[in-house]
Image 1 (cartoon, one colour):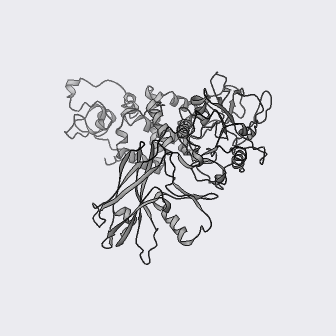
Image 2 (cartoon, one colour):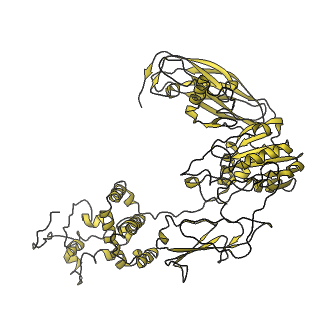
Length: 629
């Protein structure tokens, strides 16, 4: 609408609804709706179609731009509540320091009590604050405008708060995924699966035996409903029939400090009770430099860690008091550690305690010893890289494994990491499994595999040797492996676990491999490889059939010797036979924008190792061609 010159009386349309007339704004009616445009945009009760005679005289009241219609509006009439709160938070965090238009403590208190929902005066105050915020932060205005264009402002549903959904089917799925993801890399003498009829004493050693390494750190962490450690799983399932003991482990032979994994000690949790009688800690926030008087906010935390980052409720905090009553669950000496950002003080009432350590010499008296080692969220987290590929810390976990192997031949190592690690003890252990971060059911998932309850074989997604591991993603693994083969960079250094490698508790036979179809410039053409897979052992199992493509040599073009183009996993009962079928097209053949003519070797294998190639076929491409997306 064009601006009104100074001193000129604003002219109102001859016919206007009450709201536009009282606010002295132009009332625009397009005849398509029952409301004028302003009332339609504001979701107001428009009176344009109702004759003034039928309505009677207007109510005698004072009206201005602030009293009508804002006093009659709920926040949902302007925008979704969560959008409104986002803008107000932006004002408090970004605009308020420059433009302090309100008394912040009082305003935040009213905002927390949702005064905007039932206090018209407070809501009227929020409107100009929102306008100032949107106008003052250009990049935020673009975000709000994009939300409006994409329909976010039209979604009037209240955003759902976070809730814990713990269902039996979810537990079962997490357990299944964890078990099927575990990779068995060594199994000398068939020490696995564990025969509980013969095994009556099992020692669980290592820092991860009683620690459920469910996930990584940083953005990879989450609040699990519960966490089951390997020790918890063993005791719950075998505790009545098998003698199970636990120790974090101290070599007693080569490493005096004992096996440990923590960069800092884990957050204090077990045995903690706050002043309210609940488990965990109590955080009390003060706006003064000392924790005196009444805190303006109190929160409970399940463990000895907290942060005020992204907590909009405590932005005024100057001092925090973090307290708990700790009662050790086991007798002995314990270490307590304390750290913080900024000036911090720690008060401990009671007796100062030290750490408990045990010797792995006990391993000599047990029929079977399992070492649970790996990384935790303190090591594998965002924002920092690992300085080496050795198991933390100070090689103490490696020393633990070596010392156990010296006194007990029936030893199993289970590593829980998300990255490849060095395994200098590989030749000294009977069995070795890679468990990854398997979620809250990690203990049960590992036990399912160790007992043979899962039709296990999973493929190793890395490429590495005993004292050095090299990570490779699926599509480029052969590039790394075959370049190394060509340049002889690993001369005298055996590659222990090639990509796709994995053992099973049974044996398989792959036969009758054949292919059909062609690869051409037509995106719809496909090549299909088939083979027969039979379980020739006496246990259920699963085999992963992998297809690699070996391109013809092209002058001036350096390519991997072979590339993975497809795979399929088959679960088979003893003596059962199934047909494996893998289909791939020009993307798999080219792995680029150009496909060269010639004869391609099609390798049907169970890993990328030449030893695991089960059949070789030939695929002919008649001519060169290129293609776009």
